[in-house]
Amino acid sequence: MRFLIIFTILSFLAACQQKPEEETADLIIEGGIIHTLNEAAPTAEAVAIRDGRIIYVGANEGADEWEGRKTKRIDLKGAALYPGFTDAHAHLLGIGQRELTLNLEGTASIADLVSKVEARLAGMAHGEVLYGRGWIETHWPEGRFPTRDDLDAVSPDNPVILRRADGHALVANTRALEGVGITAATETPFGGEILKDPRGTPTGVLVDNAMGLIEPLIDAPSEDDKRAAYIEGAKVYVSRGWTQIQSMSVNPANVPIMQGLLESGDMQLRVYNSIDGNNPAVRDLLASGPQYAADGLLTTRAIKLYMDGALGSRGAALLEPYSDAETSGLVVAKKEEVMPILTEALRAGIQVNTHAIGDRGNRLLLDWYEEAFNAVPAAERKIADPRWRDEHTQIVHADDIPRYKALGVIPSMQPSHAIGDLYFAPSRLGQDRLTGAYAWRTLIDEGNIIAAGSDAPVEVGDPRIEFYAAVARKSIDGFSNEDWHAEEAVTREEALKMLTLWPAYAAFQENDLGSIEVGKIADLSAFSKDLMTIPESEIMSAEAVLTVVNGKMAYQSPALTPEK
Image 1 (cartoon, helix red, strand yellow):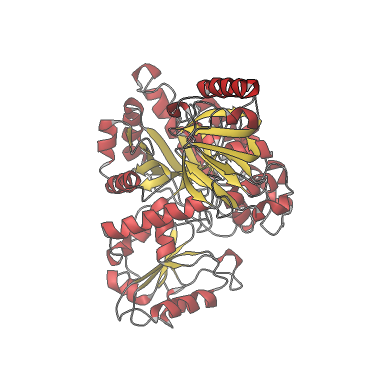
Image 2: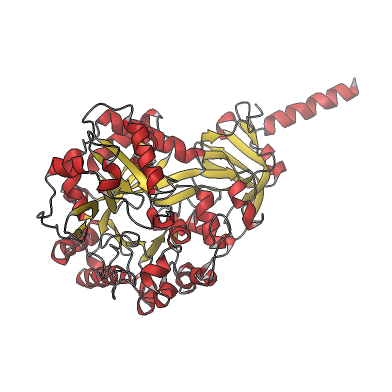
């Protein structure tokens, strides 16, 4: 009897000490190492989440105190948990469209390209336009761009338009060229190039701004098409472990579409928009200032501009001519048009993110940014630290590298570009210019942060590839040589920051995102193997098993089911 009384009293006291349901966790994640990027406590055993924010990080036993009747628990079963991975430079609409149209990723040759076109046309109506994207010729045995003649053999009745993976060139067949009136006499637009054969006949390849000539043939996608693409793109991304995409060159008209999908739950991916600076509606953003919607999942506060083209299509603007062609690339921006946007953006608190790849393109970017900073002193700016970005920063002259830190310009770089481009960059640039190519280590040592992304659909859009490329600086199959400058690789902690904490800073979100700390938003990514310790050769075998966005499970491997 005495024992029963004591047991009842203890049970009553324990019940009194339990937290009220409104103070318990919605979700507890445990069962694997947790890399927090909190210097005071770099690893943990468990994390508890309530109302979308982290309320506990620490040992397993401490997490138990946050359990309530409605708390779900996830056992990582040995997987590793990280701050949410952010793709700091990609194109969400294009990612979805790539999945829903003719995806030419992995095309092995011109013959393979033609075969894929022929197969797709078999199910299409006479005269219907075929659009595809994703080819890249640098590994092809033919050693050249595809041409209209290659495509004409299988497409006499349908216009065919195939965009290169980098988005800076396309090839069109004769039916497509005739459909928009492109001939040997067609004037080349500023910032573009119409490639021609020795007879002066267009080959079908259009570079950078010349691609606009073919746009009348490409039907603008309907709102339903866009919704489908956004839903598919977001679905693919959370399944790969991404929690946020910093989406570039966004049409302002698409922002309400994304907002609706996020509010309805059809998209579960945090989005930071950088809208197309060539769109007239950019003036609306400059007038309104930063915009936030969908419970904080959608931010629109940046403008995307272009300085030059891409290295693969020889559109990147170089200080000296290409080593393998008689051209120095293309500057696609006009200073007299860009400078007013830059100064207005400083006064409105709008971030500017500018595409620049060649050493001349990057120098011009730094020159124009510096001129704008000098024209608008800090007292006249909406935000003292504008955090403007250089999107790609691929080839930089040694004299310009110190300017990034001095000006506060953030290099936004894509590690996968290096391990793809370095197969052909030596022939494009020669040996000397490779010392300033994809210079992650040098830029970090100069005191910069690097916001890393993938530029999907130019690249696959896989966080494992970006992490691997940053730390290994080798091809996926392990190849590298002296041209690849292995000394520019980064540490694993730096690679993790490049994909988490540093993109958060580059989007003014470091107080809420980028590390696993009490009070921060619960955006989390888990992989089946610990990227921080496994051999380089195993990084690509680590599978995404859990993606948490705003405290909710956006993706969950079937192996990780809640305990209750």
